[in-house]
Image (tube, rainbow, N blue to C red; front, side):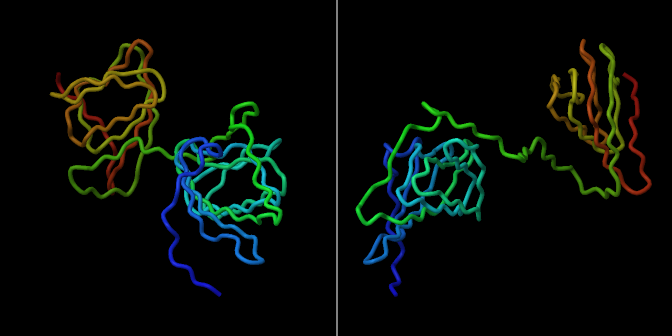
Length: 244
């Protein structure tokens, strides 16, 4: 048994084998009768190997990030930490990071006694493009709003509201905060004394409690939006019109 010190610094992966930036740290080299090699490979977002094949196959263990693996003739598959991939001997394949996240895996392979090396082929997406599926779940933060003061909330009303073309809600206030997102159409939104904003589908907005809302005016295409009204015990969300 040998306990080895921490491995030396990683080195850049050879450009002839990788598209993009990746780094390799050798964790175990073939020694004596053992022909096993273990590397840690860190892929920057968008980096991936070329198509290649190993004489005796390979095992990949994903330790961090998100990536893809694909064998020739099969679909690209998403891999995450804890996933293990077994590549058959002589099987053409590629692996690497997604376009938006880095990926690290351990690469474990047996080295042939005759010294036969890995065969490198075309870049992915070249002569033999690889379909890359979208991640099954994505999460995007669209609004994080700090309230001016703590508030007791025991229920939330969610309403779908449609305003006809050319109409508006007039100067008004709400008795609680309002959070909304535009589904269709467009509207001019303005808190009194602040600049106007044109809201389109996908945009979000926040109406502070008791703030004077000068404009929420549908444009020529009208507007439909989802509004969320957090409310406290016994409280009914309310819009109070004001004199203009």
